[in-house]
Length: 188
Length: 188
Image: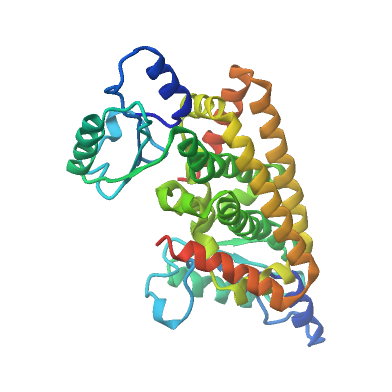
C-alpha cells in the first residue's frame, strides 16, 4: 500500500529474479485528512476505490488474492500500470492537496480575518490541507514528476477559465461553467 | 441578500435621500452547490455566518431588526463594510469556486478516465464546481475586481508553495505544510 507506485514497484521487482513475482502494488483511495490508529474505522474501505498496479512480471494468482482481499473489505478494485497510477493520483489527489494549501494561504495573504467568515464551501474545498505534513512532504517528493504535469494542466485550466471570465461573453462563460458542472456532478 | 455588496448598497443608497436609511445588506454564508426551492431546509441558517454590511447611512434600528431576524434563524451575525465584504467573499467563496472548476478541468485535460479513481478528497475539494452556472456567472461578473485580487493572491501562494517543494529542503517543506495545516485545522 502507498500513494505512489512507479518507484516502489521498480524496487520490488529488482529484488527478485523470479517471474512471476508475488508483489502487487495496492493503493486504497480511502481515508481523510486524519491519520493514525486513533481514527481507524472498520468500514474505512467500504465503497472505496482500490488501485492495483500489476505489471507483466506480477503473478496472476497474487493479483487474484489481493483483489479478493480488497473486495472482502468492501473496496472496488481497478487496475492500472504503475506510471499511469502515479499520474492519476497526481491529478485527483496530490494536485488538489497543493491547491487547497495555496487557497488557505491566499486568504491569509489577503487578510487572515477573512477566514472568520469561511463557510461550508471553503471548508470542503480546503479540508485536505489539514493533513500530516510528514506524509505529504514524502508524497510530493516521491511523485514530483507526475505532479509537475498536473500542476501544468491546472495552470493552463485556471488561466483559460480566467480568460473566459474576462471575455465578458455571458454565453461562453455559462457554457464553460456548465461543461465543468456536469463533469463534477457526474462524480456524485 | 446576495453574494456581493458594494454595488447593490451603492444603488440602494442612491435611491433615497433619506438618512438614516432602512436598507441593510445581508449575506448568509449558507447553502451548498444545490439551488432552488426543492433543496430548501428549515435549518439552512443554523450555525451559518451572516455578514451584514451597514454603512454610515444605515438606520441603527434597521441593523438591530435584521440582526434579530438572522439570529432567530440560528445565524451568527458579523458586520463589515460593503467593500471589505466583497473582498472577503472573493477570498473564501468566489476564488475557491474558480479553483475547483480549474481542478476538475485539469484532470479532464490530463485524462478524463482519471476521474474514475477520484476519492473523497477530490470530491470535497471540487464540490462547489457543481453549482448553477447562471448564479456563478453573475457573481464572478459582479465581483470581478475583488476576485482579481484574490486570484493574484492565489497565484502568488501557489507559486511560492511550488518553489518550496522544488527546493527539496525537507525542513522548509514540512514547516510550510504545517503552517498551513494549523490554519486550516483551526477552522474545524
